[in-house]
Image (cartoon, rainbow, N blue to C red; front, side):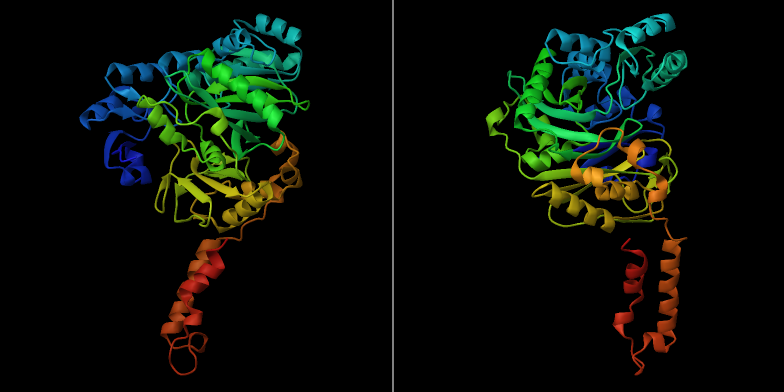
Length: 480
């Protein structure tokens, strides 16, 4: 688009790819996010110093913070996203539920406001019927969320959810909704401008999750036909219009076994999984965000949106999938992403990057596009097999497990996929110190070559390049 970019970074991210590829970059503080990426004044000061016109908040940290939105606007800058009022309305789960009910958007049965006591929670739970879901009113991402299957668990779960919500969002309010058994998580991408135009760009299937965090996403969903897509799309557009939404946003729904759908929440920002929508529609969502923020009219109407092929995204996180997905830390010693037609690596790291305790463990997104779902699955398998990351444990083995599982291949899965189908013992155990063994083999072969051994000689005292130690290193350790 010809727009110069300015990056901000913490001390931990001084050499991160986004810093090196921006036109300018400025530090905003130490590694802890509370001292860097969450410092509103410091970020706005950088924007002013660099003579910026706008701030794009990404999809973490302050991206859904109405206070930051107002601070950016008050500083004379453009916030690339919705208004502060829309963020506040849809960011508060109870007010969002109330608004959706008023506008006729289907919602999961539950409370329209936060519960104030254990006694009130018990009364509401009996009325709604177990199982129920406790959810933080001020946040998302699985924080402050607890499933309660019987009354004896309620008070302890409520206290736990409130404590986690207070820690994560500074707001302990929790509300109750009916827990939909074996639902699928399907979301609709919406795009709206400031001139009254609002469209949807189809759905994304996000049911492969663990601890309410998405791991694999795809577009389109195997359970959504044209009729259901139209109904869900219209509901999503109505939800966006209800709060005067402008820019890109996502309406998340739960879909039950009878293909009834219920409003879950709205993400008033760009989604991590936005690339799969881009791949099947050909619409560059970030470009559209910027164009809308500049005041332009959307260049397409609903009837212009066409869906082509199938896209899948795997989130690559620094987690030990053989040890209950515990986060891992360390230095990335090797980073070799896959290549090929319609294979996309959205990465925040490179070789030498440090994976620390300070940020979310997701550091890359692997996205593929295929002519159909079978083609996309096949391409994702190949891409995962070619993705080489040494130095930290990653979710690649789990993603590969998903691609091979019959339930995923048939499209017969729900948000309980991990609990129902996955056991760490199903994964291949890595050979002890594979990287070190490969490096040692290369060194020994090179030593053998330089001493004129028969292993590395063709018998005439000259080196046979078919025994290249670098080729051996690649064969033994670089193609896992």
